[in-house]
Image (cartoon, rainbow, N blue to C red; front, side, top):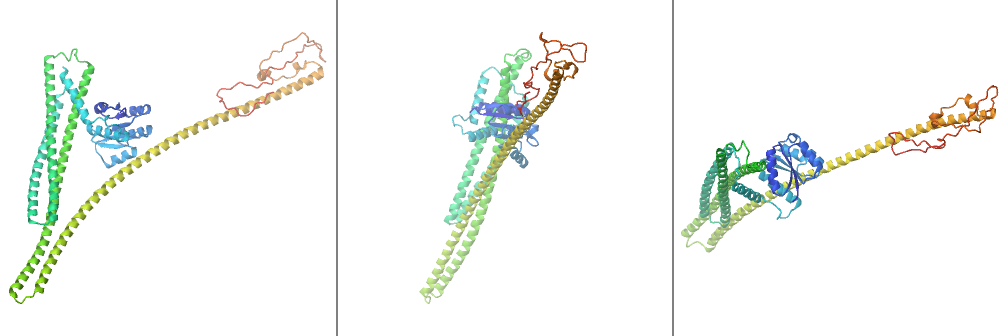
Length: 555
């Protein structure tokens, strides 16, 4: 199958037992016992099904674990194990996005059947790959047989055995009570048959005979089903008793082994830790299987009780049928009484006026008798028609109930799909919001870069104006003095800040020129053009992005 199942349950023992059985069915299992670990696993792996229960704290109020799993994997189907199916529980599960709610979370057989059914309906695997409950039980029996053939013994506490024995005794008592009720029901059915036979002998109508035959066939079918159920319960009782006997024998062997080797548990045991863990797992699985069997027996007993109630309903239907037959008999008796009166009148007329009576009067009386018989036949047809209409009405009512259930299931599926669509749209909206925030951040960064470029340009323009003023002063000084001696008298701009420190080399061709109005001569320096002139400042500032707005001006 290669289907991954995520199991998140509050009880670690139940989670391990369920994972062991599902792994035997061919599924890949991931067991988690906390909501945070389950959500983390759902973020890193893709699962085909998730199973959780209401024992977790996150699933007791608003099913937050289910909502987080659906948010992590929107298309993940989830089976929710509830102690009892209530209206509030079903509504909360539908709102959270649960695919199916399973009652009685301790019944592992129902959980496995629901899992197989759900994945089979969803993925349609081949019949050869499907593992049934009988296959699992067969594997368990083979494992138990191999374990019994080996020298390893399973440790089963006496308290657990007593608990199982107590449950078995309660189940057997319930079975005996149900058997007594079944015997009473069979006696009532026999009485009902006698009553039906009496009604059949008293009434000679063909339609009533067919109705009684149909009811009798239904009663026979119910009796046969009840007998089959009783035989099945007896067989299951024998199987459970044999399993308990095996457990007791294993316990006795274990106690004898402890008596023979009292220091074996304290010292070194020949059985490895892994084998002990496997034996404990088998013991737990066997105990859970026995509990599941006992629960199945109790459920079947309830079904038998329901069937006994169904037989009581049959008795009520027979009583109603008897009343209808009695009404029909009264109507027919009334018509027969009228016919007898007419016959007596006819015989009296024939006796009194045998010589005077005319043939037309006798014919009229015979015609009246035939009309009464025709009315009787029409009345019986009317009764049959009413019965047919009643049966058709019941069938139409059952059909309408099934259609209502189908429509309700379709509505639940549609609601679940709409909820999934809404969650997907919310997820897309979150992604769009994150994208918009990223674009806004880039825009802010570009705007900051633009402002820095503007400030840089303004500073360069100010430096350019200073340099132009400096050059103009030097040009005027050269024109007036004929030399560069004015450099020592004029204020110079800070050239180290604008262009960096530039060394002005001296040459031999420079000569000393006298300055007007001074006694001593000073040597003049020939100013050189800075290396940074005509080249843009390509130094990048820290924190600036790749986007540059505007064009640099060179000088």
